[in-house]
Amino acid sequence: MSSGLVARLVTAGILAPAIVLIVLYVPAQAFAALIGGLLLIGFWEWTRLAGLPGRPLRVLALLAQAGLMTALWWQLPAAQLYLVTTIACVFWLLALLWLRNPAFAAADRPAARLLKWLAGVIAITGAWAAAVSIRDGLPQGTAWLLACLVVIYGSDTLAFFTGRHFGGRKMAPRISPGKTWAGLYGAVAGSFPIALALGWLLALRGPQLIGWMLLAGAAVLMAVAGDLFESILKRHRQAKDSGRLFPGHGGLLDRSDSLLAALPLFATGLAWLLA
Image (cartoon, rainbow, N blue to C red; front, side, top):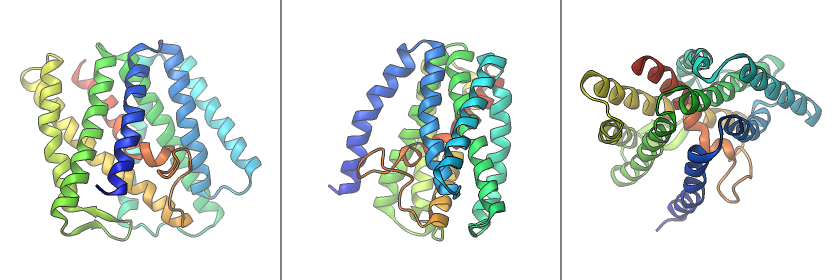
């Protein structure tokens, strides 16, 4: 068994039960604060990858981000945070163009740093709003948030194994040489039976069930985009990992980059699907 697979299994074995307990049992306000705090760790890592110069400026950016999320929490109930997630979805669709030109904003210039910082503001805020709006703004929100996480991490696991087994043509060699088209096909194909089972358990039938399965497949594709986008930021900074939160296994962004892109799409789609 490879060291990479062992690291994945150990990390999943530690994080998965903790995430489930948080989603199931933490009260709404505490949940928003806890998820916000975790994502602020990710934002701190993002400011380094964005190239913001100096710790004082990064601290100022972190405080501004915390203030933005706090203001949104006080001004918008959870059921209306999908407005924020919609903005995040638009950003991630535009980010697909960035993936086609990974050298864009690679130069260490003020304009490039500003653009990457703003991208982080949208990505982190959108993921936070998505988690809160799904869990506390939808009927059976707790179950739906867990379902979204199972789809993303289940598909990611399938991508890992199918990519290792079949190998083949690289998907984005200039961004992430380890990713293959076989892995992507395995992830998307695997998302449909996972979503079918979860949707059936959550009492979806007919067109709603089909809509949920299509949403899951689209979210998996977006999750891959989130992973590749973080890889671009790391390549621009010549960094192997976003941080050192998980010894030998990178930072928070390294473990959540796929969720940053997928959760806003889930939140926005479910708000329409379950309306």
